[in-house]
Image (cartoon, rainbow, N blue to C red; front, side, top):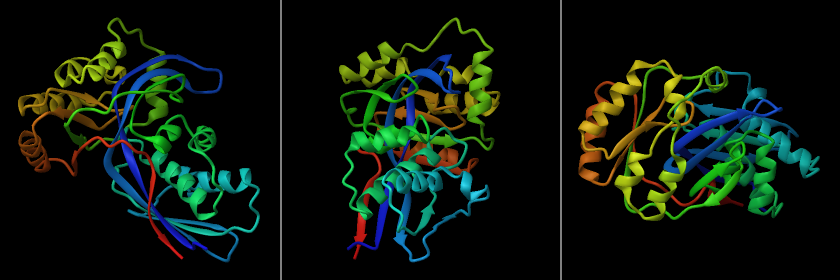
Length: 295
């Protein structure tokens, strides 16, 4: 019987993102292309005999632990699986910055669901895990399955897309973070004349044409997020050889798409002088994944 398990929980980027009308349950209808990347948090889950959920992380969690999505994921799993004799210590080694639009909280929740499914031999399918994940947040189902997908609805209706050809993402998080809730609210109050062309983006992905894809990388949130660094970072990325650049999620992280690894590395090094969070990443075709098991 397994007593401990370790899960890699990948970040995601929104290669393109449009926000439509709000729903009746505090979500918004969206249309987006999401891509999992090899920037990951590492989650270790160990059984304990205390009949309680203990959550810790590095850097240390500063918010109320009970409000953390990973903690809520564990609560939900045990409740829905009707497991009464439980107890786990969850430790998250954080690499994905908070408040960046890279789904750090959502992917940790997905990682906990995937890990507990294995640790407690629940044998839930990916579809069943995604249905459970949706109760935690709109991004969590994607973080369970990963890869690259067109997402509609509130982000839970997936259309699989072809894997991208060889490419690289340079990701830079400005020093300011963003509240998703506030950004969505600002979107409701604005009219957008020039919306992202998600269909054009998808067409570029199907033809495996990175340049065409880059032309359609657009995020409607950029018009409402008031962080001047975003435009500056995008401009520097393009000047450094990026085919295109855009913000991800509700911000504040910006990514540049490169077809040349040398240019991407050089670009990342240049940003490291001024920013704490700079990553050179590649697309991956999986979501939260068990990488280690201990008896």
